[in-house]
Length: 479
Ligand SMILES: [Zn+2]
Ligand SMILES: [Zn+2]
Image (cartoon, rainbow, N blue to C red; front, side, top):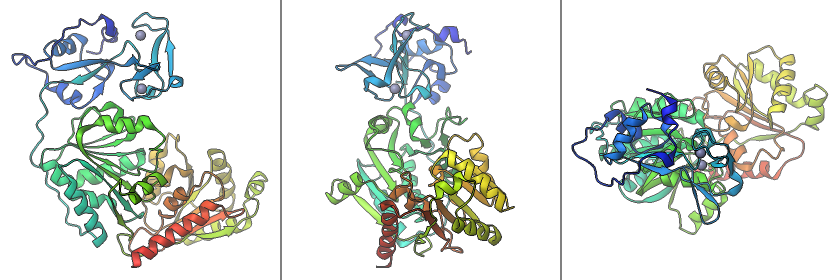
């Protein structure tokens, strides 16, 4: 099946049959249809022999396109849309025998795409999705959620975009349910894309639970559901590179969490993954300045949810001056005010997330805290191989204090939680990062005012703005 020597056929050596119409007499492979439908994949990503794939091509059921092509200014990658010359390199290629086969560095994590690499797309009949797609959820929406949900419902089936600007803890996932149900019942395909794997892992089981009859799959690096055909897909934004004209509804969660406006290729990936007629929904608690401006100029329709689901205001962070924290840490000590907080927190039995500015700070701070408290304590960062397990343990209360980099500023929702930002004046803590971090606390109805403390050595503008931002959202919610 997986003879890689066969898959090593260079693009230039494949017989070019210009097949534009489907041969109805050909019996296509449904497995191939399911895997390739709505995607753009490499030979290596398909568990079929080259001859079988080629047969489908000759009968018009799939298409090849060149992975990296020459463009006006240099090169362009067909998968991720990259055109920046510094993101291309060349190598001595085993497949095409060229000494300088140009490949794309921008999407290399999905497997190398080069000049001689064919990208395969499905050209045969569409998959017929189940018409049973009932929403099994009997919860109630808050009035703010209801308004946003209706705006989404109104957009389903049409072309357009909408920003749902919802405070952390507004319950934005529930806002999506009705619109998704209607879309699925119309036979449309829906994707929820988020920059973070943690969020995919949190959302997928919730959506599977409320849409038990629907084919739901999660896509992230290492997911075993990536080859499952699904009408509802929960994907990291990076995995979107593998889709081509697949979705009618695209929901981009945490739209501010990745530099959407800076990373054109990611934007390109989103635009390639949807049909030309699509409805795109953006979700954010802290929209970027660009997005806010677009709403002010009426270029981007939006709806705001300023109140948390449980109706209580967002916890307003307190600031605690903790002196030259870098020096204290370098000397193997905690700033006194922070040390007191840590001990009190440990005694309280409540869970806390302690945010630090960098991975190097993470280990040092964790080690020093360990000397002061005897409760379960651990640390986690983006590249941590045990990240998933640690977050799980924290959820299950097997870890009481979790020291983390900003990677967990979103998505992770745990009740009865307090939050500290150690060295909050550090540049890495932007206004939106601090708002997100503060938003981790007080999310449950039974514990709505979790405490948030910014430990600092001189207030930063971001700290001041974050607190102002939270106060303003609370004020709007009151009115
Ligand atoms: Zn690329
Ligand atoms: Zn090559």
